[in-house]
Length: 168
Ligand code: IMP
Ligand code: MG
Figure 1 (tube, rainbow, N blue to C red):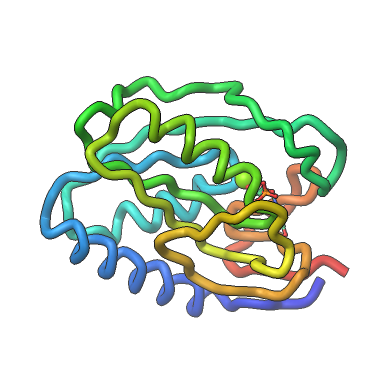
Figure 2 (cartoon, helix red, strand yellow; figure 1 turned 135 degrees about the vertical axis):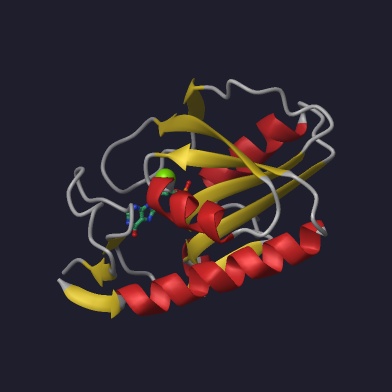
């Protein structure tokens, strides 16, 4: 494994994102929707750095297909427990790869009539996109590399690493 982003760099970026998002919200409450499992550590840190009042909920998605390749068919396997109607909602995701997952989730949640719906991803691999999707907030733009740590896994391993590493 090769270190890509040190713990301190990640922490600094998460605080910057939280400041920017809070300032864009102008003090309004936001419902954070975390995409399990990968986003749970990012969301925990982001939520604690937000200046605006925060509520939290989670979804779990599964994409049919094996390994690291998204088949393009996504479904919700654990839905939200909160109504989105009239709320300012922020989807919190670990990483955007093909964009299939977030595009699907965005459309599904938009249909529930939130007042606003935005997305934040800690990491983005734009060169891998198969569908057009752009997050409102991105922490780091990276090359086409498979990364682990800070919530991201490879077969459930390495989620607890405080930094972000490239698997090789
Ligand atoms: P997408 O639908 O292709 O954008 O897939 C995004 C999902 O794939 C993320 O939520 C991750 O769960 C997973 N993923 C994509 N790239 C990586 C990576 O480099 N490391 C770990 N998981 C990844
Ligand atoms: Mg994920």
